[in-house]
Length: 324
Ligand code: ADP
Ligand code: F6P
Image 1 (cartoon, helix red, strand yellow):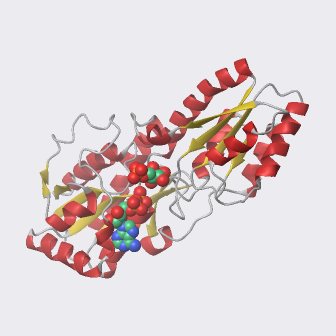
Image 2 (tube, helix red, strand yellow; image 1 turned 90 degrees about the vertical axis):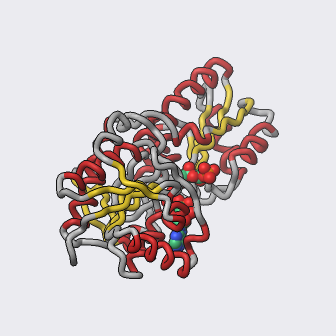
Image 3 (cartoon, protein in one colour; image 1 turned 90 degrees about the horizontal axis):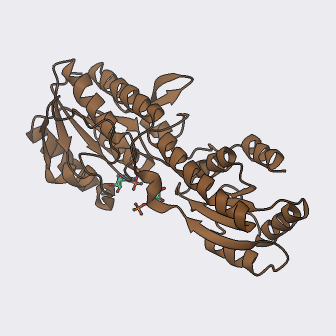
């Protein structure tokens, strides 16, 4: 493996709080090896168009505390096409760029896997609020998204208590129930509905009635957007049950993706992006920098993008026990 001299970096898929901190860490970690960094605009779309220019250590100054991504992000489904991938590589080589860092989630790392299989030196940085990459305990953005969801549910709880209501709260996470389950545990919710386990509407109605019967004065259920039974349907079912609480729906939506990253996400972003640069500099390509047992690890991309199970029966049981 030849020495890397010019490194490109992109952010792809849904933005996640901490992506800016990761970009800063890539640029400055590369600088420590005398490597020039090129910022790619708009994820894989910009990679295909050649939309990159050099970014220096000063240009990434003062960004670590901001949400979003200074490079812009985008979904670019065309990047699944092999010919387009090869065009992107040809453009990178034309520009003398000999390595790429992809900051993003599961979909984005499938893009980096494709580039790796074509022989281009690439490393990933695990970054998505969905926490849907395998072999890493967490990803950049999860902690901030959870703190945001938690503070909103705390506020809803005030009204739930005051009005003796049921609140059905939809949270993001795509096909993963991780955000929903951890939000539920952190807010003391009565129930959680996940993509990983199907429930019947009658079961939820019964659970609400039982909670009412135990003299609960409100009921909060967190519903993952990817669950088969949708938050809106659940609200409808509960409102047709005159025996218990009046129900209201609240969809948290994209507020979960924005905002200043928490301490945890700033540290994670700084460390994972640095680990990714160190890996590619040492010639260890085709890996995603992730987090395990208190430190960064390198996960082969093909393992990181495999389906993962971050929701455990133990956590669900804990919610059941604690919501009595
Ligand atoms: P995330 O990285 O947050 O999971 P997406 O799933 O939307 O976000 O993926 C982001 C982008 O990654 C897609 O728009 C596409 O450009 C690229 N991508 C996703 N899946 C693949 C794939 N199988 N092959 C190549 N590129 C992909
Ligand atoms: O991947 C992050 C995420 O916020 C998912 O939780 C959600 O399903 C999706 O992106 C929403 O995408 P968009 O911003 O395109 O509506």
